[in-house]
Length: 337
Image (cartoon, rainbow, N blue to C red):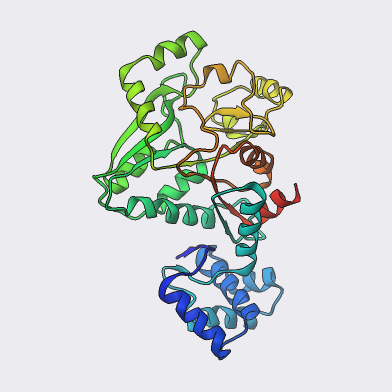
């Protein structure tokens, strides 16, 4: 089961309009509650007692809400009911930041940092491109949220597509980065894939020049420029951020980045609250494909959590992404400014 908040289309939309016209169904508020209860039950894996506590209703009411979601056919492969609050937040975030697209999934109040709904929404967005009969070049960043998305992609035959990495897949000691997703996705869908044969950071700007001059690397960077869609994660700039936790930079280097105004990073490019790249030695060593402001093709970020709010705001302010998939709580924080 997957939970996605987005506009209804096709037969589902027609059914929904008929119900509204006839008024022969439970009211929209009741269906909102039923959809939320179903999401907590089928996606987040909550018991009926847990659902009752989170929604502030009795266990019997929670059971009836889940049953209502089933009887009203809100559930198929994913919850097919547009939770009103998610739609409202998505529209507000899209308009506030000038995004081409925004999708907001429900938050589990007891696990606001959880990625299950986020991953399924991201997987659905990615699958739309992979399902195309026309050859697609799909560029991917890295990170925990993107890896979770890939784990929800079904097995497919996508041999006509190309999947390319935006950044290096090696640590300074030669080991593979923990959350690179290009090979993992290619294994699931049978696509041609192009991992970046570089470290995340070069040891010096001079070494970076040598690495980027290699023909395979130039070919991969050129392929990134032709991508029909790009999916990235957004990382924060703090001592607990992935850049530090994964050993890409030291705690001292992160402190130095923060002192220079850093709020977040995309594919290891570190930026400030305006989305401008920080003038710092770390950025002079990044071996990733360049970030593109106001890209002509979709650049969709998948990110959520209080620790990432400042980073997401910076990325949106700098037009480093054109679309966002996030959760309710994060969307609310973004709109608070």
